Amino acid sequence: MFAGLALSALTACAGGGGHHHAPKAGRGVGVLLPLTGTNAHLGQEMLTATRMAMNAPTAPPLDVHDTAAPGSTAATAAQAAVSAGDGLILGPLTTDDTAAAAPVATAAHVPMLAFTSDMSVAQPGVWTLGIAPEQQVRRMVLAARQQGRQHFAAFLPENRLGHALGQALQQVCAENGLQSPQIMYHESTQASVITGLKTLSAYETRAAAVAQPLPDAQPEAPQADTAVDPANPDGAPPATASDQPARPAATPDFPAPPFDALLLGDTGLQLGMVINALAETHVDTAHVQIMGPGLWGAFVTKLAALQGAWYAAPDPASRQTFVQQFMARYHHMPTPLADLTYDSAALVKALDQTRPAGSANGYSVQALTRPEGFGGVDGAFGFLENGKTRRDLAVFQILPSGGSRIVIPPAGKLRRSAN
Image 1: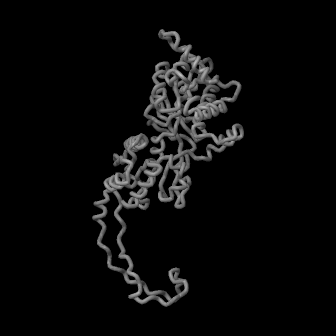
Image 2: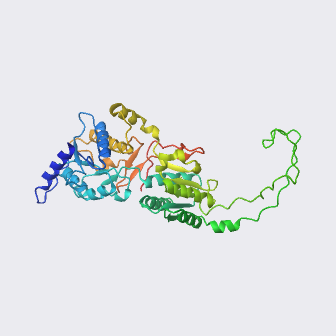
Image 3: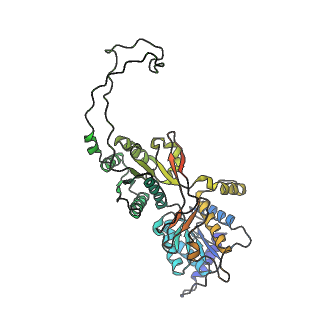
């Protein structure tokens, strides 16, 4: 049904052929989502969450457009919303669709809250609501700095996420007066991973610095009142010196690498390769705070080998009420993307209720960028005038048995930032 409505609206919009000025923006809210096609299941659930948040009779009207309908694009859907006089646009979903729709919205001075996590498409008037790599990196770097870490490095996959994490680390270090981080990207082979991490960690130099083995120490004489020897619980006569196996010579600790915090970005099989390389190059949590993307939270039970490592993500406790309400109504767990559309719609309803008397809508840049931000399903979030989105994230630490626990909770409010 929505696809048909969107298509007819788009056809009507495109039919004039001349140049039309956008009507004065009102209370209406354009919603741009893929309601058909390969992402239809996501789009439909996100629309469901939007309507759930806007369930009050006095809520602003929704103007829904299918970005995947035949003959439709994100740009034409945005143009339809502008032509309808919508005062704010929620969506679209992907980075590419946001890049296509943003010029239409900004030219008409209609704010857009997109659902991608790619901050490269953010700009004044266009905000990205997804939990971005930059937000995660900023949270962990500031936490590591508070613990005295000063020398940051990154070992990242040669892909879009890897470069987003690397750029974020460089930017956050510069903002906070830290040394420029060492950043290395690797290909998806074990040889590339090991070679790259050896170079980044100065492995050969460190290995050469390891002292010669120390002379074998003499075993201490047993005490008369010792407890049961776990290696000889039955109290058998001790073996003679000639019977005892040779003890390995004691060696000093392997020297620490030239960084005390390391950002990783791999997942899946490639992360397994990186874990192997960390062991081989003696990069461990005794000397280095290892950090990674929030994606690790989806399979953290399998990451015992990274015990002590961090990732930043929302506190799941903040989501419980929304999940319970959604499941009671729709009988299945909402996806994380549903969180974003629910939050965007709740934000719209809140601004509409507090709009100045006599104004067409409350969606001004000043209202959207209020310093205290907004309360969301995944914690507090807010917008800056340059298009950046701030989030209040927790820092999780991976446990020795796998799984994780929060070691630094969310602040419960947004930290003031000029970035």
